[in-house]
Image (tube, rainbow, N blue to C red; front, side, top):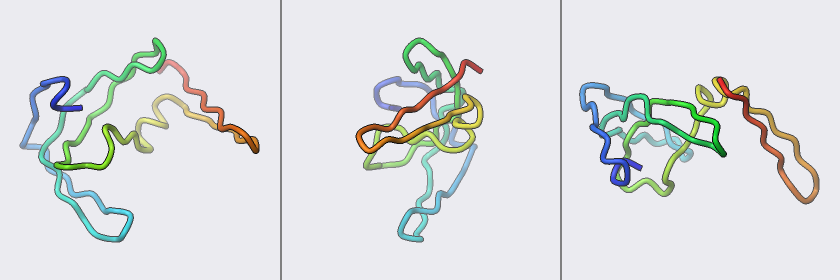
Length: 85
């Protein structure tokens, strides 16, 4: 995401993330108030930059709470609903 947006990285905001295998990974900095548009609903979040991450963007609990994310599952699908903050 950082390479695509060319947004400035605030290297003064430091965070270390615990990984799924109980390790840890240092972040390179923070893209503050990154705009995230989901089907016309604009939201914002601080996005922490990780070198060589296996994903483009990982939206965690703070963002999910902001948009009041809810989901329901059937045998065939997962339905996700978000609300305009």
